[in-house]
Image (cartoon, rainbow, N blue to C red):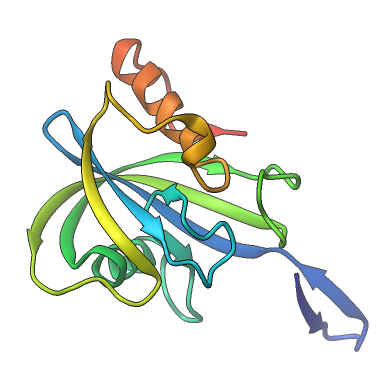
Length: 156
């Protein structure tokens, strides 16, 4: 939670804003394995992270993908807004924007928050227990969307 003071000097607790990317290339998705020093370290996740001040969600998404995977990308759509205050594996109460991103070129190396990056076929993912947070859930929603497109974004 973020503690702020409002105009009347009353303190308030605010939720963090995070962004995650379903980085797609053909029928494959790019996953990262989180570094051991992070929450949920050693588990697979979507590339993503916290939005910086004065940054749009779209710019934050592309920055996080570049930092964590080295890839550039093009945002195709906002897929999901996750407002669940009890998200799995979270120690903070985040509002998460999940984007579908078409992978570009890998132009740099991943940062120190990542131990591994790997492309997986959408039909051959690691076991759900190997995923950090609720990222497997977002991928499952995306796989369902591919079979039966619905109105987007999905709000949960």
